[in-house]
Amino acid sequence: MARPPRSDRVRLSERSRVAWMVSAIPIGLLLWQGLPSLTGRGDVHDSLWGRTRRVHEYAAANLSPTEIAFGHGFGLGTNALWAVARPEEAPREAASAHPVGDSMPAALFRQVGVVGLILAYAACGVALQLNPSAQPIDFSLVTASLAVNITELFRST
Image 1 (cartoon, rainbow, N blue to C red):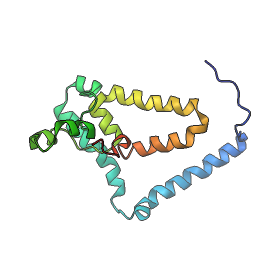
Image 2 (cartoon, rainbow, N blue to C red):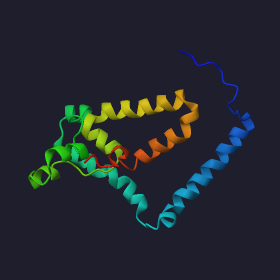
Image 3 (tube, rainbow, N blue to C red):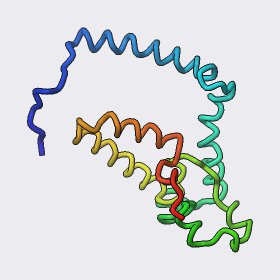
C-alpha cells in the first residue's frame, strides 16, 4: 500500500543533501575519535566490541545451529523470568549457563535467535518508515537498544 505524498516534509535540494553528507562524515569521525574523551573511558572503543564478543564466543562453543537461528524461547535471561524462578533458590550454575550480554540484541539473540533478532529490528525499521512524526523517538529507542536492553530497565517485581 503506497503512502500518499506528504507536503509537510522538508525536502533538501540535491546540493544540500550532498553538502550535509560531506560534512556529516568528518563530524562523525571526529566524534568517534573523541568518544574516549567525551565518555571519560579510554577503553570505550574496546567495550563496543566486547558486548558482542562474549555472546559470539558463547554461541560458537555452546549452541547448536538451530539454537543460533531460533533461540531458546521468550523470557530467557529476563527480569520477569528471574522473578518467577526465585533466583535465591536457583543453583549458581544456572545463572552462569547463559552469557551476560546486556544489550537488546544479545537478549533477543538468546530468546529468539538470529531470525527473531532480524525480524525485531526489521519491524522497528517498518515502524520508522510508517510513522514519520514518531521518527525522532523511535530512532532514539532503536539506537539506545543497541547498548542497553531497554525492555529490562525496570524490574517486574
